[in-house]
Amino acid sequence: MTFTLLDETHAVPVDATVAADGVRLAPAVVRDALGWELKPQGLCKDDTCIPVPPSAALVRDGAIDLAALADLLGRPLALDAAENAACLGVAATDRARTLASLDAPDFTLPDLDGRSHTLSAYRGKKVFLIAFASW
Amino acid sequence: MWQALQTELADPTFQVLAVALDRNADDVRPFAEAAAATYPILVDSEHVVADLYRIINVPTGLWIDERGRIVRPNDAVFGNDTFAHMTGVTSGPHLDALRAWVKTGALPFGSDADVRARQVLPTADEQLARAEYTLAWFLHRQGRTEAAERHFLRAGELAPHDWTIRRGSMPIRGLDPMGEALMPLWSEWVAAGLPYYPPMKPVG
Image 1 (cartoon, rainbow over the protein chains, first blue to last red):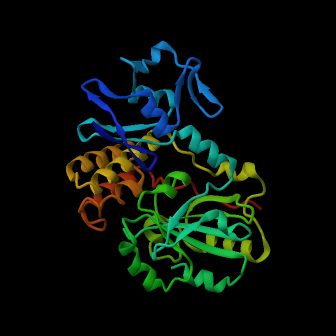
Image 2 (cartoon, one colour; image 1 turned 90 degrees about the horizontal axis):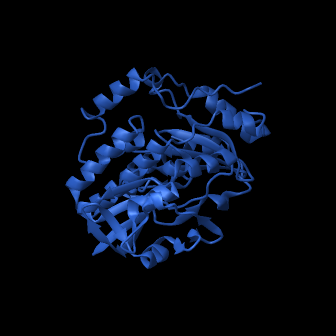
Image 3 (cartoon, chains in turn blue, orange; image 1 turned 180 degrees about the vertical axis):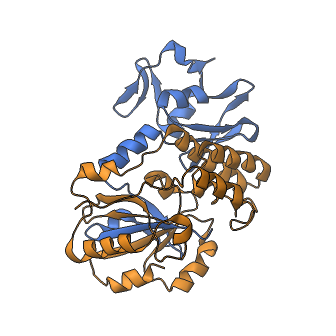
Protein backbone atom coordinates (compact mmCIF):
# COMPACT_ATOMS: atom_id res chain seq x y z
CA MET A 1 0.00 0.00 0.00
CA THR A 2 1.10 3.57 -0.50
CA PHE A 3 2.83 5.03 2.48
CA THR A 4 4.23 8.54 2.84
CA LEU A 5 7.78 8.68 4.13
CA LEU A 6 8.88 12.18 5.09
CA ASP A 7 12.66 12.25 4.67
CA GLU A 8 13.27 15.30 6.90
CA THR A 9 10.57 17.52 5.32
CA HIS A 10 10.57 15.91 1.86
CA ALA A 11 7.52 13.69 1.29
CA VAL A 12 8.30 10.50 -0.64
CA PRO A 13 5.44 8.12 -1.55
CA VAL A 14 6.65 4.54 -1.09
CA ASP A 15 5.17 1.07 -1.28
CA ALA A 16 5.08 -0.43 2.23
CA THR A 17 3.62 -3.30 4.21
CA VAL A 18 1.93 -2.06 7.37
CA ALA A 19 1.58 -4.87 9.90
CA ALA A 20 0.68 -4.99 13.57
CA ASP A 21 4.36 -5.31 14.50
CA GLY A 22 5.71 -2.58 12.24
CA VAL A 23 6.13 -1.05 8.82
CA ARG A 24 8.26 -2.86 6.27
CA LEU A 25 9.76 -1.69 3.00
CA ALA A 26 11.37 -3.69 0.22
CA PRO A 27 15.16 -3.11 0.06
CA ALA A 28 14.76 -1.57 -3.43
CA VAL A 29 12.22 0.91 -2.02
CA VAL A 30 14.64 1.97 0.73
CA ARG A 31 17.42 2.34 -1.85
CA ASP A 32 15.28 4.51 -4.15
CA ALA A 33 13.72 6.62 -1.38
CA LEU A 34 16.69 7.15 0.94
CA GLY A 35 19.78 6.03 -0.97
CA TRP A 36 20.68 3.29 1.53
CA GLU A 37 21.39 -0.08 -0.08
CA LEU A 38 21.56 -3.43 1.64
CA LYS A 39 24.87 -5.12 0.75
CA PRO A 40 26.80 -8.07 2.21
CA GLN A 41 29.00 -5.64 4.20
CA GLY A 42 26.02 -3.76 5.62
CA LEU A 43 23.73 -0.87 4.86
CA CYS A 44 25.58 1.37 2.41
CA LYS A 45 25.22 4.84 0.93
CA ASP A 46 27.94 6.48 -1.17
CA ASP A 47 31.22 5.62 0.62
CA THR A 48 29.62 4.81 3.96
CA CYS A 49 28.64 1.32 5.15
CA ILE A 50 26.97 0.64 8.48
CA PRO A 51 27.41 -2.94 9.73
CA VAL A 52 24.10 -4.63 10.44
CA PRO A 53 24.26 -6.89 13.50
CA PRO A 54 21.64 -9.65 13.66
CA SER A 55 20.37 -8.02 16.86
CA ALA A 56 19.31 -4.98 14.80
CA ALA A 57 16.46 -7.12 13.38
CA LEU A 58 16.64 -4.97 10.26
CA VAL A 59 15.40 -7.53 7.74
CA ARG A 60 12.39 -9.77 8.14
CA ASP A 61 10.88 -11.85 5.35
CA GLY A 62 13.18 -10.06 2.92
CA ALA A 63 11.87 -6.61 3.86
CA ILE A 64 13.40 -3.78 5.92
CA ASP A 65 11.72 -2.78 9.16
CA LEU A 66 11.35 1.01 9.25
CA ALA A 67 11.85 1.41 13.02
CA ALA A 68 14.95 -0.80 12.95
CA LEU A 69 16.25 1.21 10.00
CA ALA A 70 15.78 4.48 11.92
CA ASP A 71 17.62 2.99 14.92
CA LEU A 72 20.49 1.78 12.78
CA LEU A 73 20.82 5.21 11.11
CA GLY A 74 20.47 6.94 14.49
CA ARG A 75 17.62 9.05 13.11
CA PRO A 76 14.47 9.92 15.06
CA LEU A 77 11.29 8.32 13.69
CA ALA A 78 7.77 9.66 14.12
CA LEU A 79 5.42 6.97 12.91
CA ASP A 80 1.66 6.76 12.46
CA ALA A 81 0.92 3.33 11.04
CA ALA A 82 -2.84 3.96 11.02
CA GLU A 83 -2.29 7.02 8.82
CA ASN A 84 0.30 5.31 6.62
CA ALA A 85 2.82 8.05 7.26
CA ALA A 86 6.11 8.56 9.05
CA CYS A 87 8.86 11.14 9.35
CA LEU A 88 12.56 10.32 9.55
CA GLY A 89 14.12 13.33 11.23
CA VAL A 90 17.72 14.37 11.72
CA ALA A 91 19.88 12.83 14.44
CA ALA A 92 20.76 15.14 17.30
CA THR A 93 24.41 14.14 16.88
CA ASP A 94 24.38 15.26 13.23
CA ARG A 95 22.74 18.58 14.06
CA ALA A 96 25.11 19.15 16.98
CA ARG A 97 28.18 18.41 14.86
CA THR A 98 27.07 20.83 12.14
CA LEU A 99 26.23 23.62 14.58
CA ALA A 100 29.46 23.17 16.55
CA SER A 101 31.46 23.48 13.29
CA LEU A 102 30.19 27.10 13.26
CA ASP A 103 29.70 26.92 9.49
CA ALA A 104 26.20 28.37 9.13
CA PRO A 105 23.94 25.62 7.75
CA ASP A 106 22.58 26.68 4.37
CA PHE A 107 18.89 26.86 3.48
CA THR A 108 16.60 28.11 0.74
CA LEU A 109 13.15 29.50 1.55
CA PRO A 110 10.53 31.57 -0.27
CA ASP A 111 9.81 35.19 0.60
CA LEU A 112 6.30 36.66 0.80
CA ASP A 113 6.10 36.86 -2.99
CA GLY A 114 7.30 33.29 -3.45
CA ARG A 115 10.81 34.22 -4.57
CA SER A 116 13.52 31.88 -3.28
CA HIS A 117 16.36 33.17 -1.11
CA THR A 118 19.44 31.16 -0.18
CA LEU A 119 21.51 32.05 2.86
CA SER A 120 24.86 31.35 1.14
CA ALA A 121 23.98 33.92 -1.58
CA TYR A 122 24.63 36.57 1.10
CA ARG A 123 28.26 35.47 1.51
CA GLY A 124 30.42 38.60 1.69
CA LYS A 125 27.91 40.36 3.92
CA LYS A 126 27.37 40.35 7.64
CA VAL A 127 24.00 38.64 8.12
CA PHE A 128 21.75 39.24 11.10
CA LEU A 129 19.49 36.19 10.95
CA ILE A 130 16.35 36.72 12.96
CA ALA A 131 13.59 34.16 13.51
CA PHE A 132 10.20 35.60 14.41
CA ALA A 133 6.53 34.66 14.14
CA SER A 134 3.05 36.17 14.16
CA TRP A 135 2.07 34.08 17.18
CA MET B 1 10.66 45.90 13.94
CA TRP B 2 14.07 45.42 12.32
CA GLN B 3 13.61 47.98 9.57
CA ALA B 4 14.98 50.77 11.79
CA LEU B 5 18.15 48.75 12.23
CA GLN B 6 18.52 48.00 8.52
CA THR B 7 17.94 51.71 7.77
CA GLU B 8 20.28 52.95 10.50
CA LEU B 9 23.01 50.53 9.45
CA ALA B 10 22.65 51.34 5.76
CA ASP B 11 25.85 49.51 5.01
CA PRO B 12 26.18 47.45 1.81
CA THR B 13 27.96 44.77 3.81
CA PHE B 14 25.12 44.31 6.31
CA GLN B 15 21.93 42.35 5.72
CA VAL B 16 18.94 41.67 7.95
CA LEU B 17 17.39 38.33 7.00
CA ALA B 18 14.13 37.49 8.76
CA VAL B 19 12.58 34.03 8.91
CA ALA B 20 8.94 33.69 9.95
CA LEU B 21 7.96 30.43 11.65
CA ASP B 22 4.39 30.70 10.42
CA ARG B 23 1.89 28.69 8.39
CA ASN B 24 2.06 30.76 5.23
CA ALA B 25 2.77 34.20 3.73
CA ASP B 26 -0.72 35.45 4.68
CA ASP B 27 0.10 35.00 8.39
CA VAL B 28 3.19 37.15 7.96
CA ARG B 29 2.04 39.86 5.52
CA PRO B 30 0.36 42.17 8.11
CA PHE B 31 3.60 42.25 10.13
CA ALA B 32 5.72 42.88 7.05
CA GLU B 33 3.44 45.70 5.90
CA ALA B 34 3.33 47.32 9.35
CA ALA B 35 7.14 47.17 9.49
CA ALA B 36 7.48 48.47 5.90
CA ALA B 37 10.31 45.96 5.62
CA THR B 38 12.82 46.28 2.78
CA TYR B 39 14.84 43.26 3.97
CA PRO B 40 13.78 39.76 2.90
CA ILE B 41 11.18 38.05 5.04
CA LEU B 42 11.21 34.31 4.42
CA VAL B 43 8.38 31.93 5.29
CA ASP B 44 9.46 28.73 7.04
CA SER B 45 6.21 26.79 7.42
CA GLU B 46 8.13 23.49 7.81
CA HIS B 47 10.47 24.85 10.51
CA VAL B 48 13.54 24.01 8.43
CA VAL B 49 15.57 26.86 9.94
CA ALA B 50 14.28 26.10 13.45
CA ASP B 51 15.62 22.55 13.03
CA LEU B 52 18.93 23.56 11.40
CA TYR B 53 19.75 26.17 14.06
CA ARG B 54 17.92 24.68 17.08
CA ILE B 55 15.61 27.65 17.42
CA ILE B 56 13.12 27.03 20.25
CA ASN B 57 11.48 30.43 20.62
CA VAL B 58 11.06 33.76 18.93
CA PRO B 59 12.50 36.25 18.49
CA THR B 60 15.88 34.52 18.15
CA GLY B 61 18.81 36.21 16.47
CA LEU B 62 22.25 35.07 15.41
CA TRP B 63 25.13 36.59 13.51
CA ILE B 64 26.76 35.08 10.43
CA ASP B 65 29.91 36.73 9.11
CA GLU B 66 31.09 37.42 5.55
CA ARG B 67 32.57 33.90 5.29
CA GLY B 68 29.37 32.19 6.41
CA ARG B 69 30.62 31.52 9.93
CA ILE B 70 28.42 31.77 13.01
CA VAL B 71 30.12 34.42 15.15
CA ARG B 72 27.34 34.91 17.66
CA PRO B 73 25.00 31.98 18.32
CA ASN B 74 21.29 31.94 19.16
CA ASP B 75 20.14 34.57 21.57
CA ALA B 76 16.82 36.09 22.55
CA VAL B 77 16.93 39.43 20.75
CA PHE B 78 14.28 42.10 20.82
CA GLY B 79 13.92 45.22 18.68
CA ASN B 80 12.47 47.14 21.63
CA ASP B 81 11.61 46.71 25.33
CA THR B 82 7.87 46.00 25.03
CA PHE B 83 8.25 42.53 26.60
CA ALA B 84 11.31 43.22 28.77
CA HIS B 85 9.28 43.06 32.00
CA MET B 86 8.16 39.51 31.07
CA THR B 87 11.32 38.10 29.54
CA GLY B 88 13.95 39.87 31.61
CA VAL B 89 15.78 40.66 28.36
CA THR B 90 16.31 44.27 27.31
CA SER B 91 17.05 45.10 23.71
CA GLY B 92 19.89 47.58 24.21
CA PRO B 93 23.01 45.46 24.82
CA HIS B 94 22.47 43.13 21.86
CA LEU B 95 21.62 45.93 19.43
CA ASP B 96 24.62 48.00 20.60
CA ALA B 97 26.90 45.00 20.06
CA LEU B 98 25.36 44.50 16.60
CA ARG B 99 26.00 48.14 15.67
CA ALA B 100 29.62 47.80 16.77
CA TRP B 101 30.06 44.63 14.70
CA VAL B 102 28.67 46.26 11.56
CA LYS B 103 30.57 49.53 11.97
CA THR B 104 33.95 48.34 13.26
CA GLY B 105 33.94 44.54 12.91
CA ALA B 106 34.15 44.17 16.70
CA LEU B 107 33.15 40.64 17.69
CA PRO B 108 31.56 39.84 21.04
CA PHE B 109 33.52 36.58 21.38
CA GLY B 110 37.21 36.24 20.75
CA SER B 111 37.47 32.66 19.53
CA ASP B 112 35.50 29.76 18.08
CA ALA B 113 35.71 28.11 21.49
CA ASP B 114 34.03 31.15 23.06
CA VAL B 115 31.22 30.97 20.51
CA ARG B 116 30.77 27.21 21.03
CA ALA B 117 30.66 27.67 24.79
CA ARG B 118 27.50 29.72 24.28
CA GLN B 119 25.74 27.30 21.94
CA VAL B 120 22.96 25.03 23.12
CA LEU B 121 22.96 21.86 21.03
CA PRO B 122 19.86 19.75 20.36
CA THR B 123 18.99 16.61 22.33
CA ALA B 124 17.64 13.34 20.93
CA ASP B 125 14.20 14.14 22.37
CA GLU B 126 14.22 17.57 20.72
CA GLN B 127 15.05 16.04 17.35
CA LEU B 128 12.29 13.43 17.78
CA ALA B 129 9.94 16.30 18.64
CA ARG B 130 10.82 17.96 15.33
CA ALA B 131 10.09 14.73 13.44
CA GLU B 132 6.73 14.51 15.26
CA TYR B 133 6.03 18.13 14.33
CA THR B 134 6.87 17.53 10.67
CA LEU B 135 4.55 14.50 10.62
CA ALA B 136 1.79 16.48 12.35
CA TRP B 137 2.05 19.38 9.89
CA PHE B 138 1.95 16.93 6.97
CA LEU B 139 -1.13 15.15 8.36
CA HIS B 140 -2.83 18.48 9.01
CA ARG B 141 -2.34 19.52 5.39
CA GLN B 142 -3.84 16.17 4.32
CA GLY B 143 -6.99 17.08 6.27
CA ARG B 144 -6.15 14.48 8.95
CA THR B 145 -6.79 16.91 11.77
CA GLU B 146 -7.26 14.44 14.64
CA ALA B 147 -4.19 12.42 13.75
CA ALA B 148 -2.23 15.66 13.38
CA GLU B 149 -3.32 16.75 16.86
CA ARG B 150 -1.88 13.57 18.42
CA HIS B 151 1.51 14.25 16.90
CA PHE B 152 1.50 17.98 17.74
CA LEU B 153 0.84 16.98 21.37
CA ARG B 154 3.55 14.31 21.32
CA ALA B 155 6.02 16.85 19.92
CA GLY B 156 5.16 19.23 22.76
CA GLU B 157 5.64 16.49 25.37
CA LEU B 158 9.09 15.69 23.98
CA ALA B 159 10.19 19.33 23.85
CA PRO B 160 8.11 21.09 26.52
CA HIS B 161 10.02 24.38 26.32
CA ASP B 162 10.10 24.63 22.55
CA TRP B 163 7.68 27.46 21.82
CA THR B 164 8.06 27.05 18.06
CA ILE B 165 6.35 23.68 18.56
CA ARG B 166 3.90 24.33 21.38
CA ARG B 167 2.90 27.91 20.65
CA GLY B 168 3.70 27.80 16.94
CA SER B 169 1.24 24.92 16.46
CA MET B 170 -1.63 26.77 18.15
CA PRO B 171 -2.85 28.68 15.06
CA ILE B 172 -2.71 25.43 13.07
CA ARG B 173 -4.72 23.61 15.76
CA GLY B 174 -7.38 26.32 16.00
CA LEU B 175 -6.09 27.61 19.35
CA ASP B 176 -5.50 31.27 20.15
CA PRO B 177 -1.73 31.69 20.71
CA MET B 178 -2.43 34.81 22.80
CA GLY B 179 -5.31 33.22 24.75
CA GLU B 180 -5.97 30.57 27.36
CA ALA B 181 -3.97 27.87 25.58
CA LEU B 182 -0.83 29.91 26.26
CA MET B 183 -1.30 29.92 30.05
CA PRO B 184 -0.04 26.38 30.89
CA LEU B 185 2.93 26.84 28.55
CA TRP B 186 3.74 30.18 30.14
CA SER B 187 3.51 28.93 33.75
CA GLU B 188 5.59 25.79 33.00
CA TRP B 189 8.18 27.99 31.36
CA VAL B 190 8.32 30.42 34.30
CA ALA B 191 8.49 27.51 36.78
CA ALA B 192 11.44 26.06 34.82
CA GLY B 193 13.33 29.37 35.11
CA LEU B 194 12.65 30.83 31.64
CA PRO B 195 14.81 28.36 29.65
CA TYR B 196 15.19 30.42 26.47
CA TYR B 197 18.89 30.76 25.77
CA PRO B 198 21.56 31.23 28.42
CA PRO B 199 22.35 34.87 29.20
CA MET B 200 25.12 35.87 26.85
CA LYS B 201 27.65 38.24 28.31
CA PRO B 202 30.08 39.45 25.65
CA VAL B 203 33.70 39.11 26.70
CA GLY B 204 36.14 42.02 26.93
